[in-house]
Amino acid sequence: MAKRYVVELTEGERAHLRDLLRRGKASVRMVTRARVLLKADEGRTDEAIAAALDVGTATVGRIRRRFVEEGLERALRERPRPGQRRRLSGKQEAHLIAVACSTPPEGRARWTLRLLAGKVVELGFVPSISPETVRQVLKKTNSSHGNGRSGVSRR
Image (tube, rainbow, N blue to C red; front, side, top):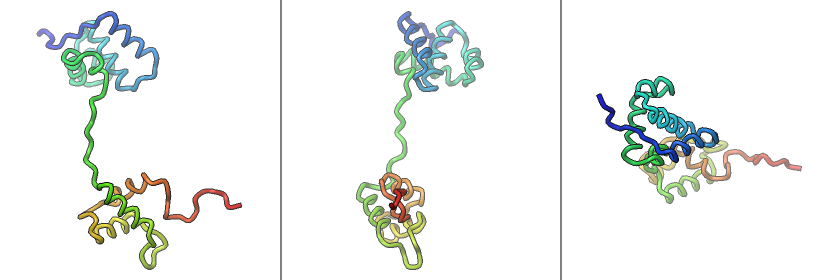
């Protein structure tokens, strides 16, 4: 059966891929894609390429298809990943930080992530929030209000 996506590199493209492999500055994924394209250009089968580079045959097929349909640079680069939408707006994050900077509840020396999550829900800033989301928001700030020591020597 004839290959549907045949990789035929120009001499310039081959030189670019070899240079990419030689420099050692590219990501591992980009290097793997470059190797797949070079081996596909030699006329190897998807199975042989997958076995030689320890990748799946579907991966080899996707790289071939992307090269034929979209060109060399698109075959080498990652597609943007949209990720998950933000849980909190900027205003909600500001409220969370304000609560974290306030005095902790009675009988507590400092705020915990669970206490902060509960308090923010109780105050009605968000319908629900996990302690992990609270941690990620607080990690973006440059200060730690949970501990009195800043790490600087008190001489």
